Image 1 (cartoon, rainbow, N blue to C red):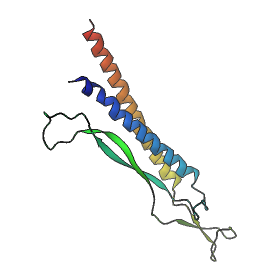
Image 2: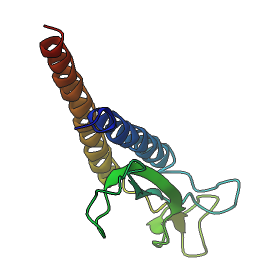
Image 3: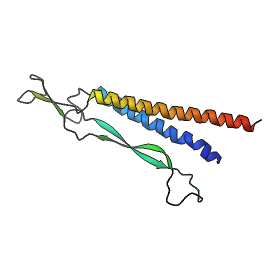
Image 4: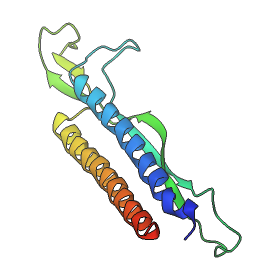
Length: 147
């Protein structure tokens, strides 16, 4: 195992930490805007979601098996707005209510956002645990070599 391979776990898990941080920020923004009936763009707030893509390992050697790709982490591909319909809520007298008293509310379910937040938080914690375990193993290996 080369030194590049020993430390690639930090790059991979680090990219996971960064991606999950973005995901948690987007979820927090969704929760904060769950009742926003008017945005600067006009209309209710639309739920946003993070799309991830995998990164290929840049340190692939010629000795690697042909046709096999090694993943090198994850990155945020883009943040997309949901195309799900808005929630219609009966609130007669609301300034944004239609003739029948219904208001278009954001297509955000706070309960689902909280579930997504816990999932993102657990993924973040898992990446952090991998980094800490790898650091401990590397330190142990260095102490054995140094004897």
